[in-house]
Image (cartoon, chains in turn cyan, yellow):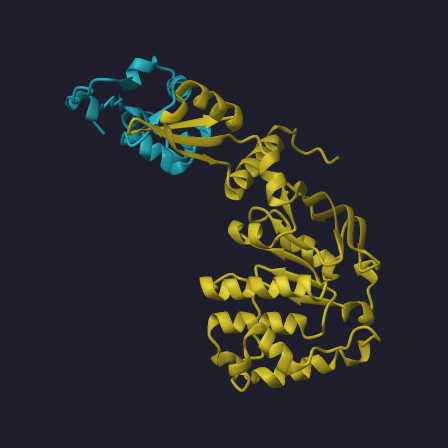
Length: 79
Length: 301
């Protein structure tokens, strides 16, 4: 029973120029946990998911989805 | 006399810069205090004032019952000092050097305490028996540091200052050094004040941890008390139906109680991780520095 949750934390974090360390400190989790969340090894609790979206000031569905996010085009990956 | 160190509102000013703005703490006999703080916070200055090497600007300081600004030879003989780096005596053989330095302490023996430390005992205590005949400059870095410690304790001090004693030690040498500190405090009732940047070391050694930041002591307590005092969250991890979850809880116990109420036996692999001393330390220092930045500049209180 795979109830995978997909997320775009890494993308948002890179776009905002926030380090894993900074995000970890803001959320009150360990540094490595950000990596676990970004790779989908762990799913956040609902409360933590809402706090992540509040931190980025976007609706929760912008970051989390039950379906894989579409691959981003060249427009969004410009450095 | 049970109170070995009594520091009250210690202030230090270099020119127009206030390095210490009011440091207060005490140490009882046989206690191990670890002084933590960012570089430049004034740890070494504080220790130098207590050692009598530096004259304070203000405040009341009592070290082994005397003011270190007026401590005589007899007072100094009761104190051991290991500085950050100490690279002289290179041509001396280890045993000779310790025997030589030890002789200075002989006049300060008391009925209850024979000074200096017997050289063979001391060599064994610091783990330098095999290097007794070697010249100091031929010792490895870790052995050299042990010799520094041996020099610091040869006079059987009642109070020992150690400034970053394990910098450059490998894990084994560090472990042996920790055993030595425990032995000195537990068996010899030596009071120890040490500085380090190694927070695992602080957690392992300290009866009490003092955090110096912004010129004052911002925290004073055991590692456990500090982590309870800091407003950090605990991380809770668990799995359910093969899926792993993580949550950051202010009250981990209440969260876990709810978790079981909701999911019962399907909750597996539960882990609750409180903030480490490192995280607690970083949070406290950051908070103190933010507070200092909010304070108006140029005001000396």
